[in-house]
Amino acid sequence: MDILETLKGIIPDVNPSLLNYYVMKAQSYFLSTTNLDLIPDEANFIVIDLALIYLNKFGNEGLSSTSNSGITLNFGTDIPEDTKRAIAKYRRISW
Image (cartoon, rainbow, N blue to C red; front, side, top):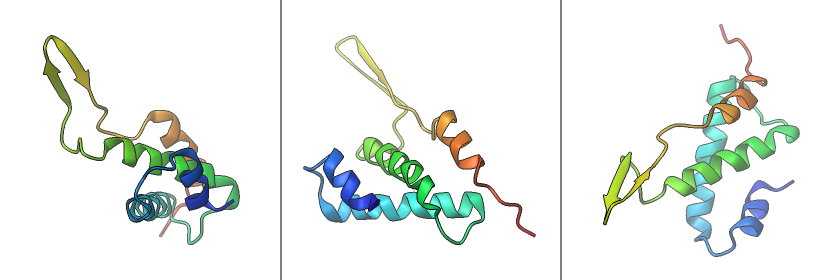
């Protein structure tokens, strides 16, 4: 499965350079967290989820909540626990 092509299918109107940046960022996060050298094919869905999380935060970095005309929006500032648990399954101890 090609991660970039899958994401383009999910959100076709996103700038390809921006999409590529967040895919690379998601891959880097996965690899550094798991201490792996390569992303297993079965873990590609996790990288896709991470890239989508990063894209959803785009333009709202550093913002935890905002209020406008009585409507308050809260933005998560971290990776969801279910995604962290999925990543942890691939984690290897590094000496």
